[in-house]
Image (cartoon, rainbow, N blue to C red; front, top):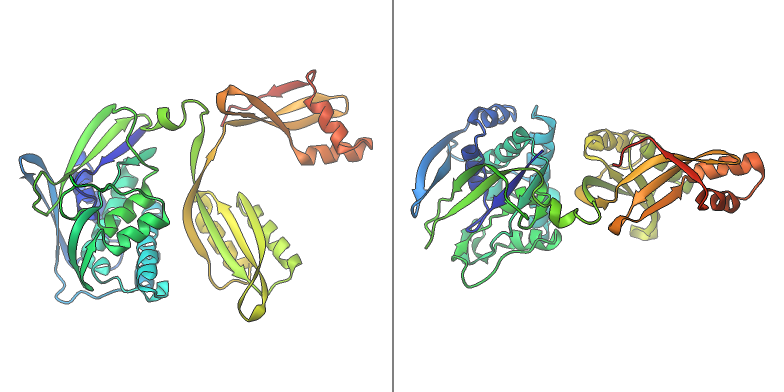
Length: 409
């Protein structure tokens, strides 16, 4: 089991991340093979150069755009370009998520509909190369956990297609606010734009934690150099580690585990409550962890339902298809989230009425609790004529015998 720690003392940008991954040992062919699948030909040249920044050795990546007049793509153009490509599924989903994070931030900053957001610099070929390249390299490494240090905010002004803007750039601040990311800010940080929207979006999508690891059991190190001249070395460090980087900080006492999930949501105003209940069961049957429906009031006073499904990452594509195949919605909101879960295992309890399936949970401090599966209680209640509460009390009494064959998960 391996993890990746990204140390970014002077900045977080797409090209620095890509350079660090190359220096870590990711073959350039891995990135070029994926980039060839997005269907834009090769209007760029990718150059790696081993050089120095104020005495620190590392790799610097240059993406030379060969298009004379590169297009300013909309979010929907990017979505179609990547979504219809033959990229590997993890690379495609992560790349789409990165651009969606950028589009959401730009939409909030400019007060536009997300589908009308112009990416300007972000839609250029070099940004496509950075995003798809980093996502491809991370997929190649197959690490179990990614930890990123606190990104530095920087200060001053930056020139953009909208003119000069204050640093941190509005899109960076918006993403930090929307995803509860703490940016480093202080007098000792260099002047200028340090964390770019692309760099931050990549880490929000790919990193499991924004914090420092409890220890560094190093396997190898990659150094990615930035292009700007600072008053200090401008570099980012990729540290490939043995084991989980934050296990002792987050899991040592309660053994809580972090699970990556996706939330899929739609608002529906043209279905009956019975239709909604049936649709929710179909989504659960297709693999959703849970589906909830809340009543809402929509435009023109129409009563509707907000339906949200929690989905494991490997079920995202299937569930997305089921929303449109089985439900009336014409659109679907989707975002990456996560949850903390306690160790649990399934077993049986032998009672005078028969065997009952139970779930045992290990709580913080080592306390063990038992939960009886409700369907099992109903089955025994119907068979015996006794109340559900009476059966539950018998199962949970101190003399009950439990058998657990499954391992903790």
